[in-house]
Length: 326
Ligand code: FRU
Image 1 (spheres, rainbow, N blue to C red):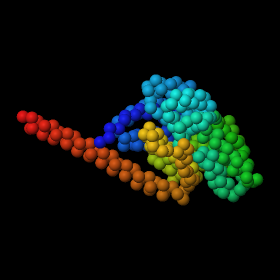
Image 2: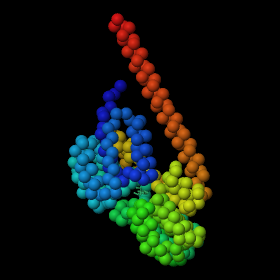
Image 3: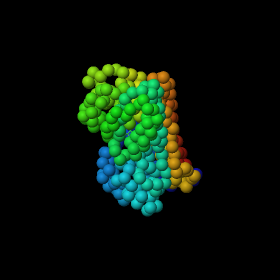
């Protein structure tokens, strides 16, 4: 059997502690478990671009064969990513981008498209008339810039739709609640709110409930994650009206990493599909998810059985050798 080379892959994550990025890491680990012997070094920059730069330097010092990175903010991380790339270490940029095209491959959904789809959905929901609020992610992070562009462009096509307020929620609940409070009047008079992720969408709904705002204000988010606290649950509980599915790309990033490392053909731009999920689709999505998770558990059971069998086989070989020798 051909001896496979053991690779070291470094993964620099902008922040690790939210459901979306936990899901991404799980997907990566699942894909890695199918390629035994890979050394995987994981670093979580906890929302700090400065810390992320240092962690990338540490990864390079650890002699990684390939870097996967989800840059916190585009511009501050551009230099270091270019440096790593120009050293000859392949770089896979995942979800968030840098400001440069010097990288080996990109994996992620089209965020301009995500914004556009949200805009189309809201325009239809409001029948072309109404006041809209946009809650943006972290300024300087590429999905926030691209989602905003797609969304604003789409809304500007309808003369009856007015973008009444834009606030930065920085992807998290706390900033969202603070910013909404500062813009309270405009928010409470709006007809629909588009939040750049479901975490901020859920906060917007909490804010509206707290202020006893009328139930007619529709809230739309992004991510549409399955599982407890995820967007699918928010939709089925009627907390938010819809969410634009934003796949994490964890599995794809690992499989492209191996193509790069094994010198197999790959595409530089790998754009994942997204779609709007509302109450009409949410049941289907949940069923599909339940099925995939049960299949996943079957695979894990098979893996355990396989390694048990291998152990038995190794023991038998040992006994056999012993018999032959004595
Ligand atoms: C998670 C997250 C997602 C969002 C993505 C954008 O950290 O905020 O909710 O879709 O990052 O990069």
